Image (tube, rainbow, N blue to C red; front, top):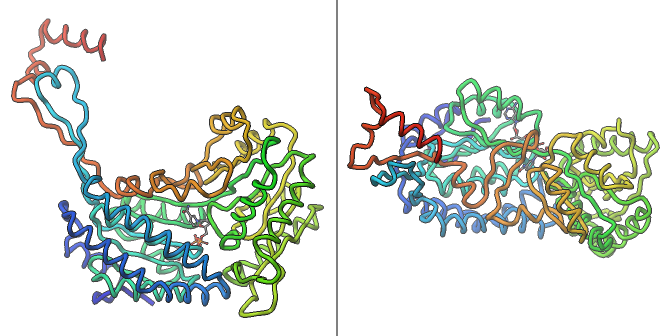
Length: 478
Ligand code: NAD
């Protein structure tokens, strides 16, 4: 089914044509227009707050309302407000240096940020509202129009987003196109001015191929296996509590979730005990799954269960932490947080991104082994280190590479809107959040104003000794 928010129905290319006709290629979009669009989105989110939580409850089977409200509404409003109050500053032309001798004669250089036009946005199911709205903060602040393709795996939320955007925008400004993978393919084949995709690396390859046909520039927000390193110098209780939080939030269905963890061999048992205690504290039996979240579908649960079974059969230690699930509401796809200790490297859980409430634990003797293990794999989206040894911290920062790093916690670098959020290598390309989103979705146009004095004559033939002397000077002093 092809839907579009607002009055412009019909095929997906028709929506893009309507956006273009309405001025998607407009190079000057005033601050007032941008502010108004951001205001409308903030109002729409607040109006639909309860509906968003209800739709996610329906889509996941069970999803903690507190987590839905926080992850989809609270953390979506903040970047919109930041963009709303900062965009005039971000839009200002930026002065840049001019080369000698033209600087002395009064030549000027500036960067002017222009809208790209119409930006396509393909969003995933794990935080369907947040991962649509947060990139939109940058897309709209930069003066663009947008077409959104939500994930079909969260259909109630996709339908709600269609209604929510239709209530706030004409389809010529922001349109929502709902449908499955075929719709996604047709969407990715459009000649957008920029395309943002958040999801898995497999689909990202198809999207890159489709975008290449039109030379559409891409922002790819992907995933990967994000490691946690627990140092000898770490406070085990803190490392256990924070790591577990990264696994229980959205039941680990987070691109930034800790995927596997390294702990010194002699610390393994006390660390597992600390994880057990942390789980009892955060998910006490009395509240059962109230503050927890289901795996999104039976298919995803079956994949995770198969991972555990395979690792167990291959000799890994399996420890179920909880929560203990009481039969209340739709709990079919709830899974306990499960530790998988020292799985065989050939198991799926060692190779694939987990994206669920399983945590692989590996032991180590020397930090060198840990760094070598991380560097042998694709560059992860995030990397976490727990410990107070600043020499180790420095080694981790300088000898590994990942999209982002949080030290002595997990996921928190995502919450600092002044930091760019994005991956590297197979965990993604391009970044957004705050001013980084504004710049990612703007064209940084180089503008040069020549000085009134005609110094350009120095570069024009016929060449004589003056030109040779200038070349010598430039070699010496540039
Ligand atoms: P997915 O790749 O299965 O689907 C995401 C979107 O792509 C959906 O809207 C879907 O309809 C669409 N799609 C599917 N096939 C398509 C095709 N051939 N052409 C165009 N579009 C197509 O991803 P997912 O399962 O929804 O998400 C899980 C992955 O996303 C994990 O790897 C996770 O780490 C990653 N992720 C990354 C971030 C981030 O910000 N870096 C955030 C969330 C999730």
